[in-house]
Length: 68
Image 1 (tube, rainbow, N blue to C red):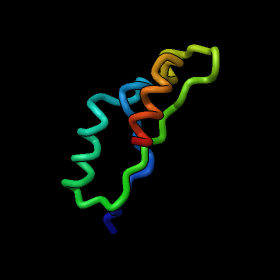
Image 2 (cartoon, one colour):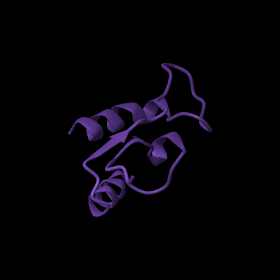
Image 3 (cartoon, rainbow, N blue to C red):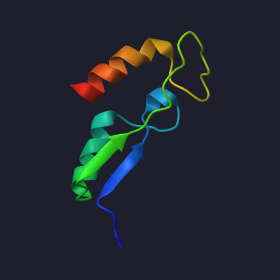
């Protein structure tokens, strides 16, 4: 059975994907998905792990984009 949702989507901010947020949203619409969820590896306060998590400097922009 084909699922109509994806709730485990990353962006380039956490270094586990490529492309823009909008591209993922448009691809989900094209695939007739009803739900898309972004589940980033968000930064730990005051800790930088660039190969595994988004940078602390990207957190506010990410939250603004996702809740806009």
